[in-house]
Amino acid sequence: MNRWFARGVILVSMAGPLSGMALADEGSVDQAREALAKQEGDKDASRQLEEVFQAAEKNYSLQKKGSHYLLYSFDYTYTADQRLDLAITNGSVRNLDIVPSATHYFTNAFSYDFGLLDNLTVGTRIPLVVKYDTQDELSVYDFGDISFTGRWQPFAYVPGKMSTTLFGTLTSKTGVSPYEIDINEQLSTGSGYYSVGGGASLSKVLDPVVIFGSVSATYNLPVKGLQQVRGARLLTEVDPGFGLSGSAGFAYSLSYDISLSISAQLSYTDETLLSFSNGDQAVAQDQMTGFLSLSLGTRVSDTTIVNTSLGIGLTEDAPDFSLGVSLVWCPGPACAEPDHSSQGPGARERGNR
Image 1 (cartoon, rainbow, N blue to C red):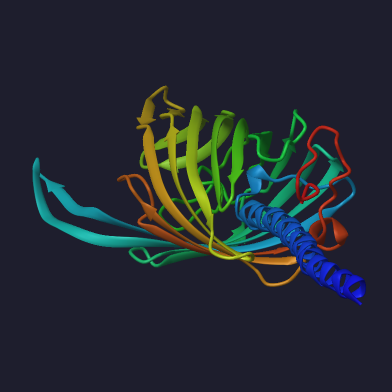
Image 2 (cartoon, rainbow, N blue to C red):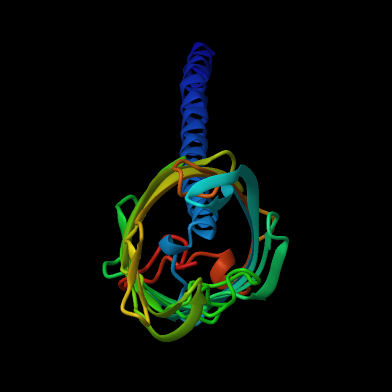
């Protein structure tokens, strides 16, 4: 009996440590599963942050080969100014008055992007412009300058590393030219000349933040054969020179589907040379434009992202402020699910949105 009692004591004493070990192993498994789930959640959060950011900052995104997306944007820009109303009689100035004026600029634009390759995306933008001048009570509704873009990613995307995208733009002069209208009776909706530009953009995801920046240069082609009456002279040629621009900012993830971005843009426009039929020339001075932009991006479904933006002019040549709303619609699985299998140039964590 003592022998059986001793065996029972031994079994009971061993059962405690064995059950503890089993519970410990089960707890370790649960912790491992939780850690893995957390890592997957972190990847999803980073990917969703990048998706919302790229929908707002188009130059930083690419389309997967064969996929496409549509973008509708509405922008309102307000520019206030002051004009001198005076008359010169017998060498003296009379009826001097300062008249406030404002220009309201509404733009509806439709953009379409298509992925030719995993690292090459082409697109176009078609603007419809409404412009109203309060002082002269003039208005116009017409097409703006249609543009064509290409974006290329020369290096394979590596999660956690800096992403580089090169881009080029060709802008037409389909809008109403300011050099082919009666400047006292009409308003323009375009620049009046063709332009070509290119640049590079950089971005990096540091969850929950995306940092980004870009630089670009634009060359504006001269316009000849004009016949615009300006006072007592006839304008025949315009040489608009070149432009430079740069921007930098960051986007912060407020949640899995909402991000807030803040950026600053600085643009320089070279002086414009005006030539007249009598041999005279006039120079429109160069301009420096600074702008501070705040944008809120919200994913409302797997294929739709809505962006709202506010811009504030920082320099004298910049508009006073602007408001914008854009709707990005990206049909197909390429926008809802990322493709991690693509390892060629331009492969993105989100499958080249």
